[in-house]
Amino acid sequence: DSGVTQTPKHLITATGQRVTLRCSPRSGDLSVYWYQQSLDQGLQFLIQYYNGEERAKGNILERFSAQQFPDLHSELNLSSLELGDSALYFCASSPQGQYNEKLFFGSGTQLSVL
Amino acid sequence: EDKVVQSPLSLVVHEGDTVTLNCSYEVTNFRSLLWYKQEKKAPTFLFMLTSSGIEKKSGRLSSILDKKELFSILNITATQTGDSAVYLCAVESLSGGANNLFFGTGTRLTVIP
Image 1: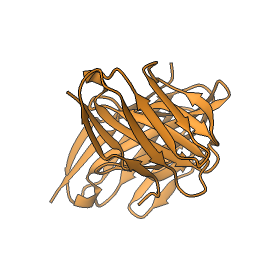
Image 2: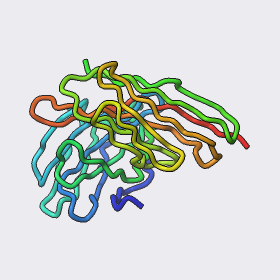
Image 3: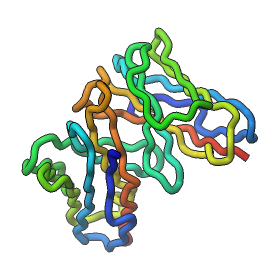
Image 4: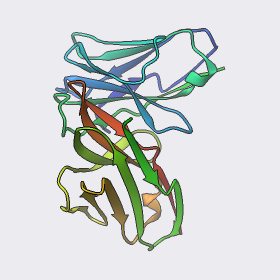
């Protein structure tokens, strides 16, 4: 158990809908990362937060948004869902979000868009 | 464009065999290279490498980094069925004032009894 909690584990929804994925980082970790893993692609970095502030942005679509709350949990919002958004979405955390810190991953949320 | 390429994509071996997984990269402002093991869901950390030529070892697993040739290898000796997983290589770089972690697509290792 990495200490990172993601909910829900599975999510099935229809195209055009909006969903929210939730992540609680390890106790004491200030930085949260979101990754998307599709069948034919590796882990794609979406966005990173540190202590409530956005720190880095990757290949995140404009239809997606995220935030980190004062209690350090984070939410990833996906809207106007398309079939291609079906993927495994991981959250990871690290203490300071600095380089040379290893990431601890949650078990992921499997999103299926029908 | 930063990229991480892993090979082979997939590997099937018998228990007891030794395997070598490869990871090559092209990133600006390299910081470190990390190996993760992904069994069912969450990737779990194996190694972090920052210096060239220094082998990291944990049991039957070992890894080394060559910063001149821009690659790393992960060796697993005396493989067991429990080693079956996807092995991910990730490279950390400093870009735009932030640290980014780029993952390869992974090598799927299957160890058969």
